[in-house]
Amino acid sequence: MREPRDLRVLVVGDAFSLPDGEGATARVRAVARGLSAAGCHVKILITSPSERPDSRTSNRDGSGVVDGVPFEYTPGTPLLSRSFWGRRGAEVVGVVRASLSAARGCDAVVVYTTTSAFLPLALSVSARLGGAVTVKDASELPFVYASDTRLRRRYHKWHVAAVQRAYDGTIVISAYLDEYFTRVSRRGAVNLLVPILVDVDEYERASAAASPEPGMVLYAGSLGHVGELETLLRVFAGVASRRRDARLTVLGDDMGTGRRGELERTARALNIDSMVEFAGLIPRCDMPDRLARASVLVLPRAAGAFSTAGLPTKLAEYLATGRPVVVTAVGDIPRYLRDGQDAFLVPPGDEEAFRSRLEYVLEHPEAATAVGLQGRDLARREFDYAIHGPRIARFLADLRSTRAGRVDTMRGTS
Image (cartoon, rainbow, N blue to C red; front, side, top):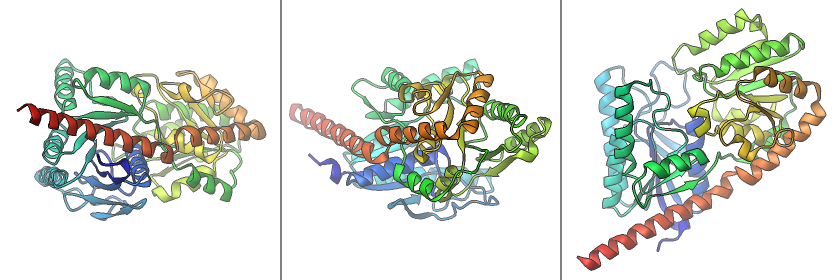
């Protein structure tokens, strides 16, 4: 049996970009880095271009190395074609090349995709030919962003039933997803719960080198979460009416949806536009320093399936800085965090409670700092990538051993 430290692992997907990106990118980098630290031989393959040609992006190279792990855009470039058929052709080429890599000698394929059926099915067939196992890493419910119509519901049900059978197992980020994928996966498939991941040392070093700016409130994440950012702006407006030294920085991209313009108009309507900075998407290497300069890090979450099933990677990064965190208590968040001890938890939908907690942190910096440091200790115990890398490696090795045993049994009875 191949030992976990010798595993050859392909991390493949179309739901992230490299070297920079948002939540999915952070998850991929942490998992790959954890496996590499555990002694596995890891390579990341991205099967679809992700960057508009006219965008100001740092993702310009078709291949490279990130966190010591090699990566490659299998279409040959991260840049999207300007034509519809060019984009579709690149996606096909990307999947075919990734599938050939899976068939040519690896032990496990870890897949990141949200809506594709072609990618996991193709990878599963290729992996089986090469004797490898195929595993999905699930950080959210399938089709959680899709519009809800009867026809779409039927398609989504069929899609999940068909595609999930391609996987030998699933890495899930929450207890909710553990139960969900146990229910929809084929018989014999198994799950491994791996929560949000972070390099605590990286963020602790940044915090040691930077001092928090008085009154600085910071949010980092996608601008696409409709309702959550509007909630934050209203909460901040209430704080700013009492503290004129307060400032809010919002880090994140709207992916060309126009959401940034909508939020800027909301800030003007609330008369806080001079106190709010929409800084856009910053390079991954700058994130620890930007978070470390905040007096408080905030993460509003709306109630619903998305928040219940998911667990935001940004929360682990927040906690790792040792700065105080105000976050909505939804999903698995209360499973790990204790209000007033590791972070400041707010009931979902309670803007007044969020404002009160945020004001408390700004007005009681010493007490809030103590809570922030406890949060860092918790992140080191629960979320550090170096703890979970060996767990994932053992999970993949056990799956492969089980697969090999089944094949040998079938051969013996044929």
